[in-house]
Image (cartoon, rainbow over all chains, first blue to last red; front, side, top):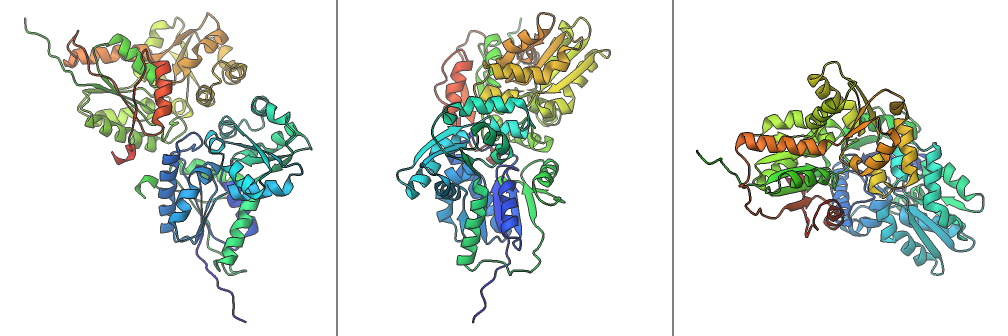
Length: 274
Length: 274
């Protein structure tokens, strides 16, 4: 029998900031043999209230940068960029480019009993209705309700994730949703898993919370296997690499909280030159 | 007697977004004969949690852009850029480049009776201690206390300026300051004047609130007069021009709320190409 192909090149992954590390963490868990090259666009974050034109332009620059790192596949960890840029940029590349939205939609369909699904995300993600389209493509009778929660990201970034004020903001944004008959809620922004406990408490046991990161890592695994792009199993992989467009030290500190190991060094690059 | 010199070139003014329009409005009021060219860096906002290196780089790009518009002077309306970039960039230019911090410091010194002054602003502005240095240069015995209020900008941007939640956040950030004997508070971020009423209510009548915009416009007037750069009085000026790096339409709508007239058109440019 012929031995399966293997490919030890790294996987590129990007986000507007640190949030995408929740996706990187899941990839590390499910694909421990793969090397990652992570880019966080900290000079231009947040993406959630910016225009589609610029999100596409930013994503193209980042993809060009990641390709200089010889990546074999790219994961857009950011929901906003997955919603607004993936449909355009994926078709421009020879290597696989995956987002998180199809993954989140599939997980939600699997979990729901009554086909009533909620999605929370940034203004841009919700306005694009990308989750709704992805869900209804899989399950035409699904009812999808989206609510933008623009204060969630600053609340997390500014250290209010555990604060009572965050419970009040959750109530302001999600009160209507709680009164609906929805039984499944997609956390459609990489920051929101950091509010998962409070959101789950708010909705109670009747609502299943979906974090697309887990399913996105499974998607990546399936694509790598199908395309013969997996690294050789058991082989010790090269070190993961971390790049940002601003404030590398701050990123390094935050990254060490989210990832299962301490990040030693993050390198700052000028992303607009790519 | 010789007639005073006059110079009908426009004045450049920039900010990370719409906030600087509160400064532009004050310049329009005090210098109605001057044409303004405004730039809002909406693709890269906010500035308040980004590094000094990048704030300097962004400011240099914007100054290069404004110079293509043939400006005779530049006002950095953004407190963060005034704190982090002005000391570096002002020395690089032949035309006057003014910030808002010296102006705010001077106004605070004039108002205080007990030389105990508070400053609120972004993380970057407060960490730089630029207000403290500017105040103590004028009044060495002044006691300056700074508090970063990073949630204020998103609260304003997301339409919570009038919401009860904002009162709670004000209390979280400023409770310690209220218990001090400070009698003067500088609003050290262009967004904060939009929370002025709530902040003033929180502190009560004993605390004088300083908005540096008024004094900054006076500074500009003095510099123009001294350098012989004023437009000819009474002459109808050319239309003000508005540029942003993202989402021109959204900016146009917000600008029309802040300025005394409706902005007709905002043009989007790629600022990183300058």
